[in-house]
Picture 1 (cartoon, one colour):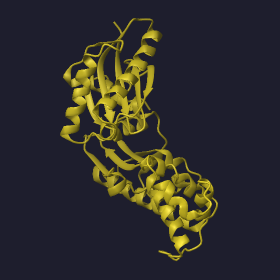
Picture 2 (cartoon, rainbow, N blue to C red; picture 1 turned 180 degrees about the vertical axis):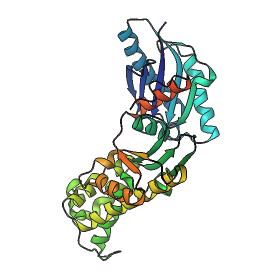
Picture 3 (tube, one colour; picture 1 turned 120 degrees about the vertical axis):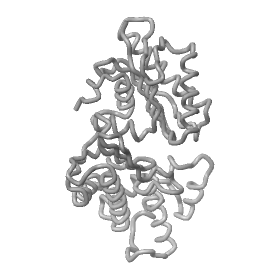
Picture 4 (cartoon, one colour; picture 1 turned 90 degrees about the vertical axis):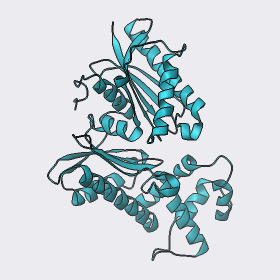
Length: 334
């Protein structure tokens, strides 16, 4: 009998599932809609998780030429899972999966092989390849999370777009929109007054006048993700020399570097080497934001080494599931 491990990466925009064997090889992969139950509801979140697992296990079964796969460990790394109530909800998901008739799985789970965690941990494990290091996530939202070999953890950020998310795409976009509005109003909050952002947003939305931008930003259906999608406009302006946009990117770099320094100093000793994996759309901008971050962080934390992700978060979830079985062969892969 071939037994497998399931890893789930459930976020605010999509859900990914991977099926691994004991050597850490991916046998199947499935993708479905969002599964952050705080935003889409419990019923929809479960349906997305079930769908992703069904697609991944069907692919694995076909690859192995068997009717169904036997799963002995599962890790669900979901956005917004940070409190006891959240864990209860996800435990309910697991119970529903065990009785689901729509997925080709034979379950062989023990309680110790059901891992429930937030998406920052699986991003760290997937990015570094093991559960030790720091992950700096800068996408729609932002969070910096670290874990040492003793299991001590520290997080900075992750408070959402209203209370935090400094350094995120949402923060960059809102900062750019506010700068454009200030320019339009003739109200400078800094010594920098000339910016192309007003014109860029006007062109992007094909507006006859910039002040019609409120019709776009406040229209029904526009939320955090839609506003965050405007960050590349600010990033490109910075790359092309717009000083106001450059100052926004510099502020983003400083905030992310400082947050990462706090995490490093909280869980690692001063002489420890520490890998910092960067993940999220912000790091791929044109304004060299990642290079600036790396330079700034090395000045603050000389033993930090900034890396790109080695594996995706869903794979990190699979490694945590594999680790729960006591098999560390794949979890130590570099």
